[in-house]
Image 1 (cartoon, one colour):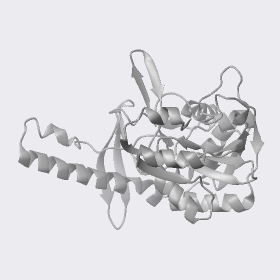
Image 2 (tube, one colour):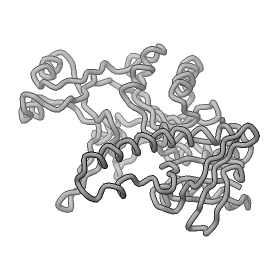
Image 3 (cartoon, one colour):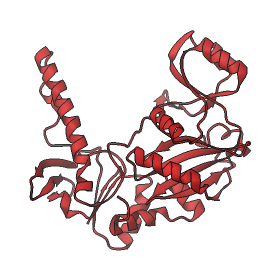
Image 4 (cartoon, helix red, strand yellow):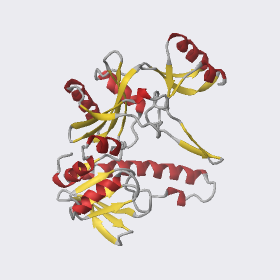
Length: 331
């Protein structure tokens, strides 16, 4: 029996198709709903386990009943952990109790995350590390000898202007990419080039902003990491003005050419160490191959899309995920 924590659309569906085609029993739960609740954690010298209620299946089960767990998104939450139910009025004492409960809940989340490993289940993902700190990842990559773009966090547009006089710059979010819909228009913060024109309309003092040296690329690499192996794809995004700065700004009329690709073994070993230091056993990563024949690391997404690599390159990653959950190669 497999347990899959994912939303009900997109990438996970292809994995579900493989699991279903092999007749493997599974429970799929949307962790952003109230469909799954933890009721009891048992830790004794003889046994460890977690009791789960799967409301959409109408059952109570235990984590040890599963042989594999895939954490694509979300996390398990404990019953009665909604601290806000206490404070329906402005009371300083209840505010302090609420904050204490929230800190206790965070401790529970960290605790529960260790149980699939302690039970020796076949596990893909880590719900403590679904949103890694991109700046810390850059620091760790740099310390492992992996080339990164020259990166600055600045809150003064004059300083950005000084840098812009010396080299081309890009800016991008250092948290997650957000989409905002307003007046029937969707705004998304992709990677974009910094120009004197866009800088001129900014206030003198700005919110701390990431700027990086713009890398002149021959192509980009998107790679999916699973079972200690990288499944990589070269993306010739420089061929389109639309995707020149960010291939995720897809050119639907003239899609980028993509081909299977093999990263150098020395670089792969460093990247494996980076995943290990981050506590990740799977995830997507992005690199640039420059006009100077150098690989430059951009970022890791622990729950990055992999179908865009799987289908064009015939890697059958969805099948490999199914096999990993059932055969136990990913720990």
